Amino acid sequence: MHETDMTKALILTVRDWWESQPEKRAIAKVHLTVGKFTCVEPASLQFAFEVQTRNTFLQAATLEIEEIPLVAFCHRCQQEYLPDIGIRYACPTCQSPMEDIRSGRELKIGRIEYGVE
Amino acid sequence: MHQTFDAALEINLLHANQEGADHNRAHFDEWGITCLNIMSSPGAGKTVLIERTLAALRDRLRIAVIEGDMTTELDADRLRQYGVPVFAINTGRSCHLDSRMVAGGIHRFSEEQDPTQFDLVIVENVGNLVCPAEFEVGEHAKVALLSVTEGEDKPLKYPVMFQEADCLLVTKMDLAPYLKIDLERIEANVRQMNPHCTILPISAQTGEGLEAWFDWVGTQRPGRSPAPATEAHSSVSAS
Ligand SMILES: Nc1nc2c(ncn2[C@@H]2O[C@H](COP(=O)(O)OP(=O)(O)O)[C@@H](O)[C@H]2O)c(=O)[nH]1
Ligand SMILES: [Mg+2]
Ligand SMILES: [Zn+2]
Ligand SMILES: [Zn+2]
Ligand SMILES: [Zn+2]
Image 1 (cartoon, helix red, strand yellow):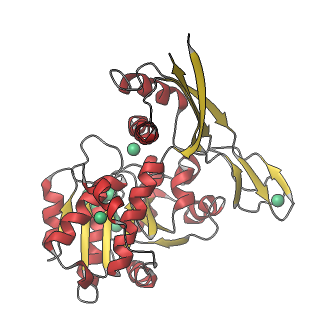
Image 2 (cartoon, protein in one colour; image 1 turned 120 degrees about the vertical axis):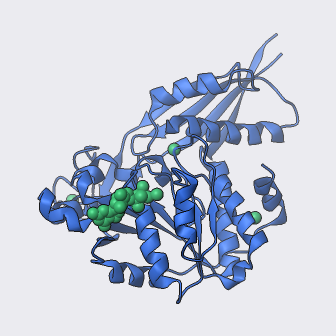
């Protein structure tokens, strides 16, 4: 299950940030953006996050995932289009290959919410 | 009283892995080594391809292998028969190699050998078409294998791998006549998302296409990146 490893990477990255902070505050929520053109399945990620953060500095944290559609730009037609993942990626108008991905590759930690007593 | 605060991280989820990959690549660049990351689903022919490559190129190039696709220690032993150093990575239950695991192999390599005497490091990734494409390990080029037995639609179903590949080897071409596989359709499917990829049909069995593959390997070069920082070094080798 590669979401397990993705979650590991996520926790590592958040931990790096957390350890660089002068005060260690409890993290309440981690906002994640996940593009549709990645190998990450949000539901599996959600589950892995719950399991792997037990008894860690992230145990009180929830994961909020925003999915981003795959959007490509065709330079010949000078227009954006939505490739049909699993079926076709070329421009539906002129068949040019999908070369310029405008969104959909994101795997990004956006914001972190943390509390102060 | 309970207050909440926000911190805008805007950081890639794979940030830590990316830093490790840059560290590894800086080592390769410093040593003048080209690193190839070989990826495919299980059984597409990675190990056999590496065997053929070692047999053909070991007199021309000094090669080391980082082996992350072991079913048993036998795989690594098979490759050691070609007289090259093979560093087996214990991936545990991970479904891909990450840059930290590969750093372990690279550091062992540089302790046991003089890496400046080497030209090429071949990394055999875990057999999986999904996430190895997302986890850079410090390679200069990604090589994907797709065997003719897997069908023409695989590139559409696992697009990230095929979009990231610099070279696609369509393997087991000797079986193509039995399977009525349409090579042109495979190519067209890959071209939909990766028009610049080098596509080479090969057979490790008959030797078809292997010369073209060896030529392609010969055209790959390391880049020039600054020497790895000491600080980054200790953080990667610590675990
Ligand atoms: N017919 C045929 N079989 C092959 C070829 N290349 C590999 N194989 C077979 O495919 C199986 C898996 O090969 P292996 O290299 O272990 O695949 P890996 O899992 O990607 O490393 C083995 O039984 C090989 O003998 C080929 O070019 N033609
Ligand atoms: Mg293998
Ligand atoms: Zn994985
Ligand atoms: Zn178009
Ligand atoms: Zn190092």
